[in-house]
Image 1 (cartoon, rainbow, N blue to C red):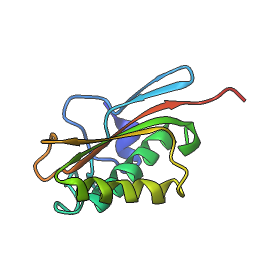
Image 2: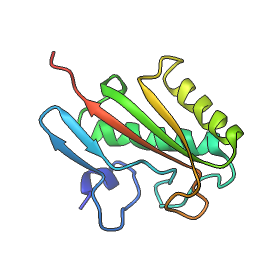
Image 3: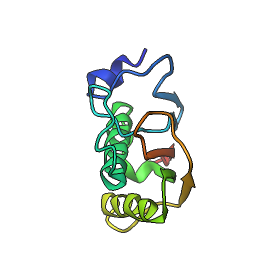
Length: 129
C-alpha cells in the first residue's frame, strides 16, 4: 500500500491509503506535517507545519499527475490560538502566491499526531482540457 507515494518521499501510513484516483478526481487523506521518516516537523511552529503539509500535498498530487491549479478547495485545520491560524494561513498564502483556491480555515482542539498543529485536506479535480 502507498508504494508510489513512499517512493516519492512521503512517509509510510498506518493502514490507510494516501489517495484514490477516480477519473478526473483525486481523493486524498488529510496531509500532515511529517517528513519522509514520519516525524512531525517543528512541533511548535504552525507556519512550518502548514508549509510541510502543502509540500506533502504537492508531492502526492504529482504522483498522480495533478498540480496546484487542480485544487478546487482547501480545508486547513489548526490547533491553538488565533495567531496559530494566522501563521498557518500565511504559509498557504505564500504557497499560492496570494491566489488561494476557495478555502476554509478551522481552529480545532486536537489532531491525530502528538505535536501536530496543522492538517490540510483538499478537493482535487482536473478540468478537462
